[in-house]
Image (cartoon, rainbow, N blue to C red; front, side):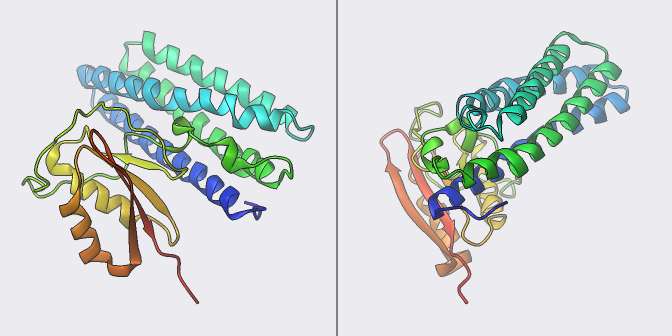
Amino acid sequence: MSASRSPADREAAQAVVRHHAQLAADLDRHVGNLLTAADQGDAAGALRHRDELLRWLRDELLPHAHAEEDSLYAAAGERAEGALLVRRMLDEHQAITGLVAELETGNRPVRLAGTARALAALFAVHLAKENDLVVPLLVDAADVSLAKLLEGMHDLLGSSESSNGGGCGGGGCGCGGDRAPADAPAPTLTIDPRLDVRQLPHDQRHARVLAALEALPAGGALVLVAPHAPRPLLAEVAARYGDGMTSEWLQDGPDVWQIRLSRRPVTV
């Protein structure tokens, strides 16, 4: 990726690429589950995993694609060097939508597996073009601010589902229980990717957050969205990382708590 004209644009570009990686990992996980069931001759399991995949596609991937069309693609398509590229990217969105429709109407495990595999392969190629061509084009454009372009774009930069998993060894997380509805509105407050743990089982939340933090690069950040003030979790993070991880409270209730967790950059 080319060097950005500003730190804000560079951070915005990194946030988009990180979210792309999360989407790809989540899609691969869903497709892998479907393929395993099909390989084992488990028709009921294949249909169940097909339905789970479709829910994720409707809730995550397709809204992301529509948000891209209205923001990244609209800006890139106005540039002479990006017009043809954007037309091809839009064609690929149509192809992705067609494969989703095939999944919705199919019921034979072998056919479902083939369609899911084709979807994952096409999406991987599509994301590579976005990361290597579309995002750098906008970062290098003197008359475009990628950071401003993506302000408030949750469908491009955040997700309620994370590909990092794990449990807490079977016990409760000790956070004092949920104190707010899991579907309370949570405004997007930064361009950083979000980790919304509100709908996760209570005993999985700490491990999910710690795994996501472990995967952060130096200088990287994420926004934790929680149904209560996660003070025990923050104490655990502080004990594990010390000064290497900082926390910034963005929203302190009453229905949603958001904390930006960032790994300090390496200093020379």
